[in-house]
Length: 297
Ligand code: RIB
Image (cartoon, rainbow, N blue to C red; front, side, top):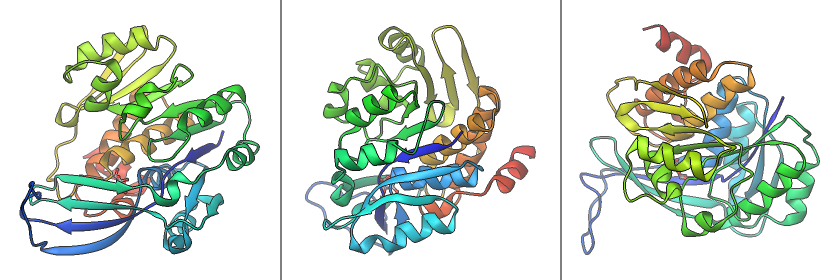
């Protein structure tokens, strides 16, 4: 089984700040870095580091060579990434002294995907393969429907959640991997009570499986019949960027290897805990051996 990740590739402009900028305020950054990121790219790196055979599809601009190079260096197949006239997507990320972040994204090339490109990419995959999507590219709903028709297992990380995504037909999504905020929005609930979100999503998407990440409260898998919780690993946060992406990649990596949901949750929790101990996005994702070492502690 292989996995097609149709997703964003971003240049991340990361600013270490004493506090997040408020309306009307000017803040002087303590440091700036240009990193490799994008929820899609980060998840491909996490999948590859977890040992999966991963194909990344999407678009970059002429400024995107460092993004595709990084994927290739990490064993991700980049033959389905197109180079377009529009500049690559980018993110402006503020990181505060507690390692928390806030992120502004500009889609750029990530929003230039055509139907012809989608068809050509899906052509390479067959029944039983996985398709992974996040919400930083255009035409998510079209990709979901086409992949479902081909018999692919469709996995959606609905991040960032948008009004447009909430209008889309998501009934053909087999797996949702999402955080509490995204879960509440998808369930049309005002807040993030995990039990309430679970009840509502079971009714709204009875055929789907869910992994709900709950921050310091760990993570929960649920489907129509059962649910499983894992605790979070405690670490000192340096930068939480890409923690969710790491979780997604390692969870799916373990599933693709034939692992149980329980093992996949444990491994993904350990991998994402390690990610928050390092600065940056894609480069903060640890390889499988390090994650397994950490898991033994
Ligand atoms: O999930 C983290 C990612 O979100 C960053 O790398 C940034 O590019 C945004 O897409």
